[in-house]
Length: 103
Image (cartoon, rainbow, N blue to C red; front, side, top):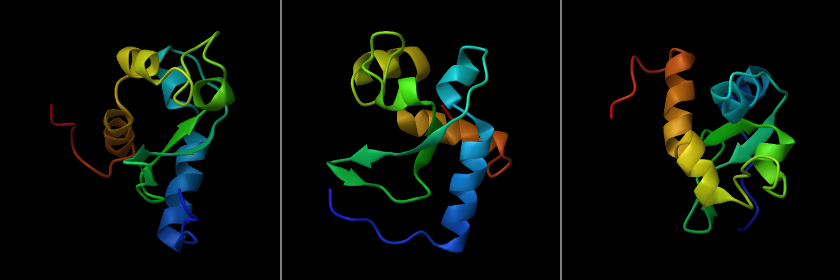
């Protein structure tokens, strides 16, 4: 992955709002925890700053032993919480960007 472009104002606002939300995986487990931003990657390329999720350290970069980590236990993470794009769509609906998630 090469360096990404600097975030635009809208992208910075999205990432700040997402981080303020807290970890989406912890929320599915019924708990609240602080989060940092995880960029969704497809084909070894970041999809862009609007394709980001708020994840706590264990769900983001943890070793996957305590909770599934998107970087080190991705298959288990997806089985438990859904795909990164599904989580992103759910967050967009929660924020009122879209009316509903289509399945």
